[in-house]
Image (cartoon, rainbow, N blue to C red; front, side, top):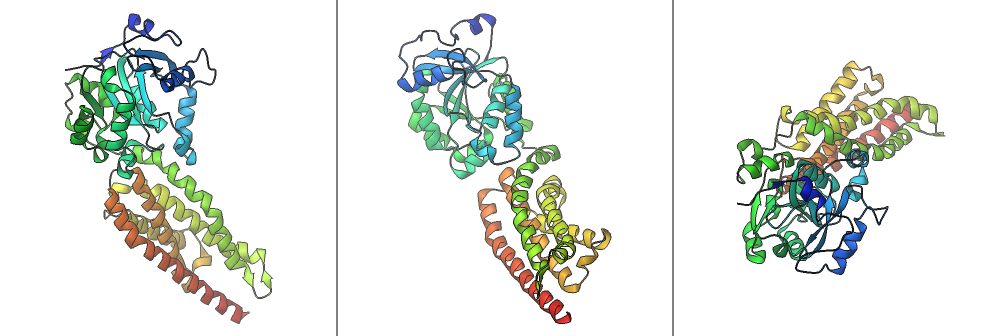
Length: 395
């Protein structure tokens, strides 16, 4: 049984010079050579700070990576958790080395979403290991497995390109448990000769898992997804929703400001302000409150959970927060139709951040929810037209 080995000073000093000559049975391909140059901090000032040199292998020089996060890694984590930068936060797919691995060292598979990659390399502090990165289009392991980019084909392709059979003497790769839905272990054995071991859910449990002889405890197999875990993910939901909110706000101002004499800013602002506040409240309810309180809100459906919190938020706002401009029966009906639907739609987006619902569940919710959302928006618009016509007739 092969084990991860602790890094010694001698191992760290030998065979890992950044630009030293390659050793081993085979020469590096032009792609490996180019990548080793790019990853060499002494020859390329633009090389990633998380690379420390190269490790020679029979299939060519493999970039050696640090297990210590720099300030840029922490900053990248914050940016990737708060916006669209996530889709550009990547590392090149291929084989990497942690410490000074040899032919007996373990091979761990991860996604090319850099935050996933960073979490894995940090978990391997003090060890020698190989890290095989799949091209998941900057998507984490769980979501990529569901979308089909963390897949049997991609894993087999990267193993073949890296000439993994020449790099290691054993025939085993460790795949994250959350990637199991995308990887057919039997097919990998058939196509590459390597067995797939599905490791723990959390990268931090990898060392203990390997020391225990590749055996997982129940705790290692459980996805806890605590309140803090959910809270950390909410900026990714709030930010896109807030980017679209100006269009909602503009629509509200237009409707309330429209008068027979033209578009009046004073009326738009004074009459539309309560609806602006309800709109902001629905964003926070769907993107923040619902995810944080997810296990405590009744029903399994994310759409229903978001609708429940949306209705409660409208009730509290109109009853206790003094939004007197929404007391008209027609406006109140619009508020209870439109804003819970908006909260529900935003909450439904959070399914992509959790392991609570599979792809089939998401598709089912969308199939049912989208027509209801469109219906709620349409009825709300009709009611607003009725309200404006009644208002103008009074004038």
